Length: 254
Image (cartoon, rainbow, N blue to C red; front, side, top):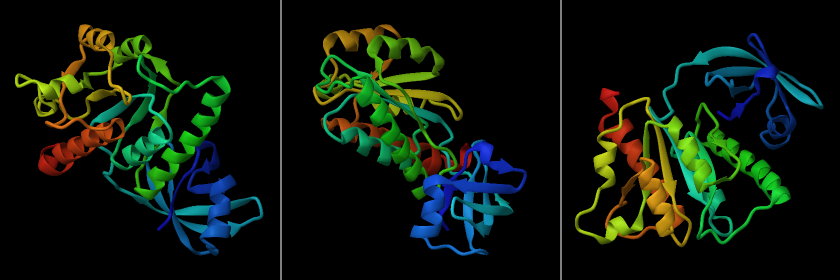
């Protein structure tokens, strides 16, 4: 059953109006008819099975048949702070990271980031990113759409990090030494409902100054296994590991 995220303003009690691209998708792509059922997600995270009652030229109307009781979100809030990568790698991180349960994404301008986003480029990219995470949330049957913020500098990220319970950064130097701090050690200390900030460097990794700054302000440097991962792989490794730990390995205890 196809899922759609509907803004709060388009709900009125148990009735919902679906507009724009979603209405076009229902009528032109899925070719639904009156009486067909879809899933509509409210901004508060709830979801309902709805029956289509009207197919208009400009919108689709539906009514709630049954509210669903789902537990599909990670039991911890994980925000990925991603050093700006080249090409379309960030789009891959957004799509797959959303499927794996990320709560939010923060693009970060770092010393070794090659790409530069100016004002117009940033606005255009954020519009596209919002569409990517929405579609990925619908595809993976999530109840929430991750937020994608404006790009931050490393110092702005450090200021933002005071809002998190656990802060880590994947530091490639940790993978090269025997006396390293493993990601597993940190994961075992994370409790359900905590807010976790994971910082991933761009293709060239963190500069020495950035690594020192992050450590100074309470970020734990960790290795993600004995191999050096590409920037677009690291965040997915983290999210998959956290999903396994909290939803499968210890799923009955959270």
